[in-house]
Image (cartoon, rainbow, N blue to C red; front, side, top):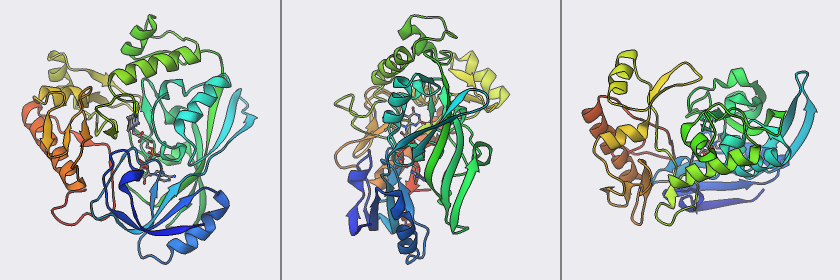
Length: 352
Ligand SMILES: Cc1cc2nc3c(=O)[nH]c(=O)nc-3n(C[C@H](O)[C@H](O)[C@H](O)COP(=O)(O)OP(=O)(O)OC[C@H]3O[C@@H](n4cnc5c(N)ncnc54)[C@H](O)[C@@H]3O)c2cc1C
């Protein structure tokens, strides 16, 4: 295990923002984790965990605790369950894109709609990663994690992970470092039913159809690229965390009022009714590519925030606040940031 000190974290995040880590460990070998635990014990605070940095805003002041980047890779096909699903054990640092590709190649159905989502497998339960009708809660069986409060490794079944709409017990907690996960997928050449209208339109099939796995993934990628939601797919919006805000939950009265305005209001598997964050931002008067603060603007393809030259963490949080306040004023609905704030946030420097 190699420790480096004062390493800039900005290049390890997709926004390219953030100060240095007091101490940084890139963990490639699961067998090195006990050494990291021992090392992290020399710091007063729980370590910060990083995957590929595609959903984080790191403070300009960086992190005064140890930072571990989970770079452990590997997938092991395990046994079949009694109900005919195939179990797959995945190391935390394994790329989600590679995992989805592998499941498609293996003829396993259940993750194909997650094609193109950046990040590591270990980060997927943190916000119950999902898109286009599938989310990690559909296939997650269990998570093995280091519990920094108990000082030992624990196994949490999916129910114990508290997976909800872009949330879980892990979100914002810093108590656990996910080490490996088990997913269960069904052997089938066909996708789960296509529920997203844009994906169905791209496939030219009715909503509810099941299509070959690779076709489903290809169509999802086309739709995602159209919104700049695949990393590196467009020249203008390279520094992105995808959606900065999650689609907020609305009351039945709000839902009725918003539906009357033709807002995209949908019912979610967790029982919540939500309105599209992009629609709210647009409705509040923010146009594509609009600069919000120095170095932060609305994406040129999608109603989310992206970074340009000169961006800082303080500026990004200011931009979040501006969009949030204006949207609340204009639509009556409060947006909720989806990104995770990492590091030291001094008063007045932003963060949550
Ligand atoms: C272009 C783009 C499109 C996106 N589209 C989607 C989408 O469609 N749906 C969606 O849900 N998300 C989407 N995202 C957000 C992001 O891809 C996911 O949140 C992803 O799971 C983050 O993975 P990561 O490895 O980069 O995690 P990081 O950004 O490094 O970390 C995210 C959070 O997870 C924690 N974490 C990371 N690894 C571990 C671990 N091993 N153990 C414990 N905690 C850990 C971190 O501390 C942090 O709090 C998108 C992002 C981008 C840039």
